Length: 196
Image (tube, rainbow, N blue to C red; front, top):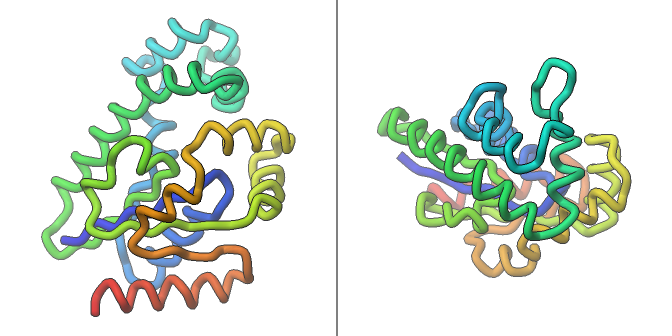
């Protein structure tokens, strides 16, 4: 079994790179953001802690957590982001570890996680791929994909570890500033090197 970590910053294209590996090579992708959505579902321990910490203003009429509203509140400063991460990260890490334990010996697992380095998950991966993009590309992608203002995108980026630090830890770097086909070509070359 091989475990490959994919990380980067908000809007650099981590999930796109993970999808290339899944489609082209059949790897199983564990998307940390999707797992995080599951662990904060109504009634879960993380849900209860989040509501206790951030208040009922993060809930909709059905008493579900509004992720966008929660992010708006949490990303106002590093302290509140840290509190949120201390609630959600342990749950997400447990789910990832369980999925890896259940995987077959010949499977390739890809962990797609924006905070892979910050959450100290690098020890779980055999190879670390960092996806980079310039700030202009990040802003364009995030404002379009998540329908949020540039200032909110910048708040999230600024609350993550600088991309340059992650790049120093990387086994491979994907430059995702070009076309999708250029990115695919880089990913396929990295894959070839991993299995060489």
